[in-house]
Length: 310
Image (cartoon, rainbow, N blue to C red; front, side, top):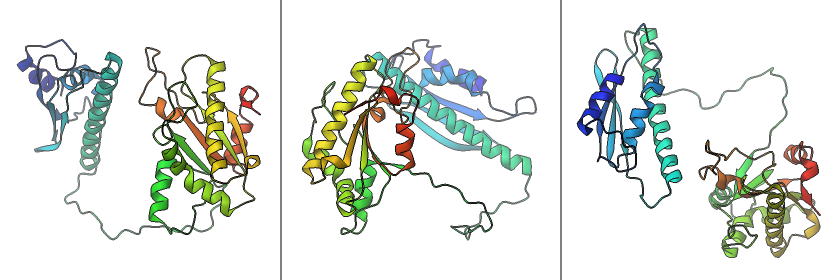
């Protein structure tokens, strides 16, 4: 595989500039095969070569599996990276492509290894497998509530019975669903925000005994104090939406957790910059039924004493 990659890059006169678009497109072929000495593909050995290929707009990579006879497993095209993006953003896009290609290559060799180990005379795929298995005699387990994405809830509700509100334990409204002006609690699109909470507010109307937490979260940027204050203000803004929709204010408790929320995902890049592929998910407000185990998880978390509340 390493030899093939080097040969593929020879047409670029051993280009060493990995900036997007530098050197023109590359058309590379990787032949994937395992041997007794290297049964596991060492993708890290060619990661830099793949990175250089992905940096050239319009490049293609063909993955060939050598399992007795050569066959094309997949062909991947690396589109051009917008030159107007920052260097950090360009790097993120290229690294994501490298990860995608190495994952596909690993999958290709894994499939080959399974078939090779079994040495079957023939291969058949069953089409009549059951879609559901029922097991009896197993111990009881606690149910775990699932945090549903606000956008997915809207789509699910559109496909369901219009007169029946969905019952949910938790719903996350990240910035792809409800967005704020940068660094403020001012909604960019109040009308869209009202539409985003509609199904949850309808569920609360149909269950007047239900109460909820509104957990404000942020990406890890700036100081801790400002992050906590901003997350609280944004969660309070979402509460105002529910109140405008007819939900009593005393049924909604607001918490500002900043980046100390139990739902926080690491959004720090290796160079300490903010990873914008992860950060949008952290800039969110989460609606949680107070009777849910998730509510107890938040209220009993290690940083609960730092949270901002009323």
